[in-house]
Length: 337
Image (cartoon, rainbow, N blue to C red; front, side):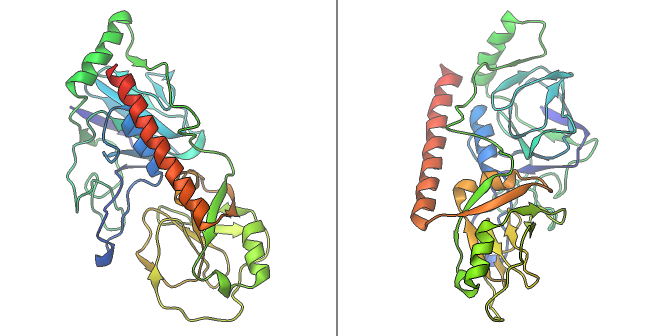
């Protein structure tokens, strides 16, 4: 079984939840920018959460299903359609062989995730199928997908295929059938315009003046065009951030969501392809529960930071994980009931 890439879109890569456990050797985690969206897409088709899927950025690809498939789309709504007919996000869709999926040039959010029941058959590198573009490893030969690529995939498990084929009996003329249900917004919201991103004060927060600290929380920041999977470069609508006095810092550990401030005073938020250490002052750390919101802000999009305590950040993370477990249990009943 396979998918054929008829056109690749702006940037379409294969991603899972990344290479865990190699940062001490300088190997970055990489993986999906919006890991929550990929996890939900996988659950919707009965996969394990860390199965590899496609990450579609802004301008979507055109993909032909070479065999029958069960798939789901989550994250940015880039107006997907099969054979020219609009389909809905955040639900399982059984697609007949020969059907073509494509996207419109406009939409909400920045990144769409496509999961297939059974996943994608590409080699693992250091335990992950994620594409790390700068190193040229993982995914499809370490690069973004291009026209003519054929991506092998095992296809839906026999039980899933049997369940969904029953729906075609009632609609034999249809090339695709989608579920009538979708996860509750309380369990998975998806992208939001101009989100407020919650963060805790970073290790070097006290090196900034009181005015600088207040400016950081009060300003509206624009995600500039000089942004990529490594990080968002932000530009505020007020004063740039400066230290109370110049400091020469040793490189220290950074992670997804670390907000650094280089000498020119405009913050950088590190993302999936971030380096393992950095030498700029870390003014804040985005809470894990808001990584998904952050990753869906497109270039030109606006964000504000909202300070929360470490205890609140932990509570938000635990609530998000509880939501995922509840969603998983509900979907198991739907897919097998």
